[in-house]
Length: 347
Ligand code: PMP
Image (cartoon, helix red, strand yellow):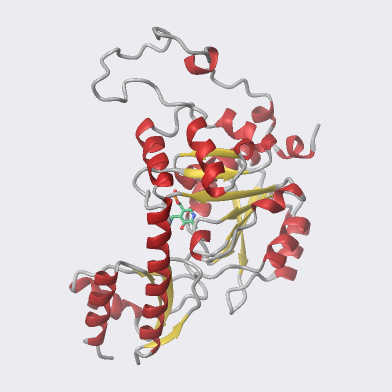
């Protein structure tokens, strides 16, 4: 048994996956009477979608340089989080470790699957507490360690060295969630998979690729994990419309690059402006498309903005986030409006 197989749940290792009509017959044919579809083609989506997202993964290799045989497409990266927990963790027996604070879905999907969550609190400067995490991993042996980099909601990247130290000390799977990596100017960590096959990288087309409504997530992993994902995922998890939308956006990569650089310059403009405001005590460094700020009264500022039709995210009840609001970088017009409204706020 391989190292990866040994980490997998036995019922996944031995699972005989559902075989779709499209898996049974792979050639070209004129008449498809194998999938109980309708012949009425007016919608353009009367056929089931490609369960393997072949065309999309080829284009992802071309545009994002992520190797075809290392990718699997999911219904948003949220589905990837759920699938990975179900592939590697036994309900009531295994655990996962997450940073605190971090993206809320890791905990929800672990809870949903009856898998215990171990919190690894970040240091005051929002970096990873390596010695503490190493100690917990040695004692509790979590099956999956989730590292969100750049982290949501703190906004910053962890150092590659820190992430690799955790991934090497972790005898289970290390999932590096890079939903916001495009805003960081860094390539991300997928190349580290070659040296450590227990690393899984998550990407999404929901952020920089403007496709949150389409639900397109990308798992980058060793082919062995990719095969397990293909077995465990619902056969038609990514709709034809979503695969098509993703292909369309990838073909518009120059436009995306233009929007990205606009978001980055707006991020700097907003950060500088926030620093001038007397009711904001801290503006945190961001490698993402949002900015975390610490205010003297988060509730009051949140309500003030909401009353003027501007909604931000109040994160102030989370550990280490007292008084903190997370603000997405909007369009230039939206940011102008936000700045104008904030100018009218007084303590
Ligand atoms: N990971 C992180 C860190 C996120 O912030 C989000 C969405 N807010 C997701 C994953 C989920 O993204 P998707 O739309 O691909 O499901």
